[in-house]
Length: 151
Length: 334
Image 1 (cartoon, one colour):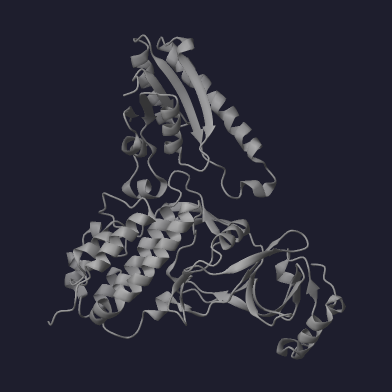
Image 2 (image 1 turned 60 degrees about the vertical axis):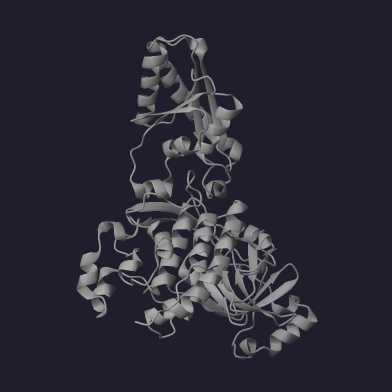
């Protein structure tokens, strides 16, 4: 099992994502040897995105600008809990041809993180079937890691 | 108004075939020749679409009706004859649209993508269970898909033979499901190559008149579900399987109208017996037709509101359906 203190916090612009950051901060602020990775994975653009003449590079730049704001807010929360700035890194990636959950797990495997933290949306069965549940996918597909789902 | 040329630009053989064609002979105006198909509403019956040195005379238009809506002409999908070979084709001209498709209480963003259909046509060239065709590019870069016309009928029409459901279930459905296995494999092939069908409907499966082979048509729709990219295809495959098994869709009104079922069957249904997304469509068909075995009915229940486990891939449905066919019951005397 990978080091559980190497923690990915998957962030987006939802309130539940902020809850997850707050929760991790409240624990990590009291621990030593913790490394936190704020990770924002965004999906490929919708199929009609390119019709207006926009490019993938423009889409990525826009997403990365948004991610910077997310990261700044999350860092502020973590540091307010006492997490050292040097213990926090940020990553922003496009999911590419895979799902967001698969992209999170890919980074987790590549960089040997032991814990993934995500917010919980609280969706119906029908929504889960159609739109998917990132937290459920992480729980089902994650290997040798801890997955914290924050409601 | 789209720019066009006169028939003087046509090669000699093509011009002769055009002049002798029944469509041209019945027209009061000369045909126009279009190399730019952008404004397809200006291109009309009797006109010629010239693309990549091929010349297609428009002889009629395809129509589409959907579940109670009157059939409407699709001006971007003309039926044509190739004026060099006199072979018949269906053209699909570039038409883009984006819309939100309602699925119960949810909306899914859908797109019509000529590029996607062009890529799939290339991918499935020569493969069974797929409509065949090629893509040409017009003078301004529009993708013109040249489709081989359908030599058969819609699957959902073919299965209605007039027999009782019991007779259908024991004697006709096994062969239908066997063909449907091929359709599932075809969709698995698309998914394996990163494509969705995008518009899986029971009227998008045709039965080849000569071979009896089932095949998919219409690949230009796409949808945007980043975390579950194939979920809508899977759900619609389930809907087709439910339709095939019941030989129709069953809502409480159809059950009440059937003297063999009626009120007792409706009262036996619980919320869990209905569709996950279409909450008035019965999925637990075993309650309507008790001779449907568990092994088949359990596949259907994966698409019900009572499901706790969903199919993640087409291969999973295929494996379960193959097992259900291997254990298919024989009719016993009543």
